[in-house]
Each structure stands twice: as C-alpha cells, then as structure tokens.
Image 1 (tube, helix red, strand yellow):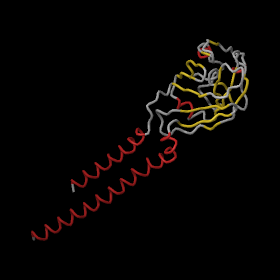
Image 2: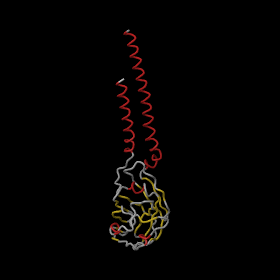
Image 3: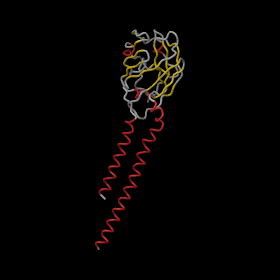
Image 4: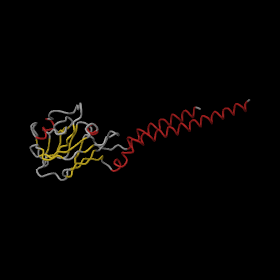
Length: 225
C-alpha cells in the first residue's frame, strides 16, 4: 500500500515537471528587451520607421509624448535625430493607432528598425495585438503606413522572439524560429492533455497495484487461518 502511494506521488510530480518542463523546452534564449523590425522596400525619403500600436482601453503605457525616447533616436544614416512633439509621427492617431516610440512609455531608445525596451516584448504585444508600421522622413512626417497585422498571443510567455518584416506597403508578423511556427498551435493542447493522460494512466496503475496488494493480503490471511 505504501509503495502504491509513493508511486502515485512520484507520478504526480513527474506530471507537474512535464507541464513546466514543456513550457521551458519551447522557450527561446532571447533578450526580450530588444526588438528588430526587418525593413524591405522602404519608400524614397524614409529616414526612420516606427511600429504603430492600436490603443487599448485603460492602457497604462500610453503617454502624450515620450521625450526620453525621442531624444535617443538614430535615423537610417546612423545620425542622431530628434522628433518634436509637434511632428507628424507624434500627432499620428488614425483608427486608434499611435506611435510606439513617441506615444508609449516602454521604449528606451531606438534606431532604424531597432528598439531597446524597458519591458519584455510579450508584455507589450500580448496587450497591443494589432500593429502597423509607419515610414517617416527625417523630420518625423509620416510618408506611408502599412497594412495591419494581428500579433499572436504568446501563451508560453518569456522568452519569445517577435519577427516583424516589411516589403513596401506590406507588414508581416511571425514568432521567430521554424519549430515555434510549426508546433505553437499544438503546444497549449499538448501541455494540458499529456500530463492529464499521464496522471490517469498512473491512477489506473496505482489502483491495480492496490487491488493486487489487497488480494495478496487476503490470501495471506486466509492461509494463516
């Protein structure tokens, strides 16, 4: 009986480790305070690009103007550039979309297609899941805006690599890595189903062990009598 209980406890902890080990197995060795956007086909006159995030209700990250990030921006030709609060990018607000650089408080500094962030990317994009991209000139005027993309929800949390890429007017998004792209739709299901199935199997085995133990005990008692 004691051995059966010990076996069940061991099985329970094995399933527990299976759940959290499965999550860690699909984690990426990636610094989530860094983000890169791959730019192709930028229109003539583009000096800077910025992601546009669709505002959400009660967004604690929204600000009128992020002067810190604005002062620490490098344009396409690797020259320092400072976008004032009256520039087109700072004022941009169409269909609820605003500048990630200038209208949110989590960007620390940026260059052409690169961001250094104060928080992890999954915390940003699990909340702001509708994204566009703005091509801007050196004065912060918006030249062109891409299509909208829907960012997938990162159920596995950190670390996650977000891959944005443009081709002219088109913006695309994927989680980085072939393994993630292929397995991600199944991971949540497997992480739940496999441990449950394992526990059920262990439960059945433990019941059989208990019954066998009881049968042996009854047999031993009958022989003793």
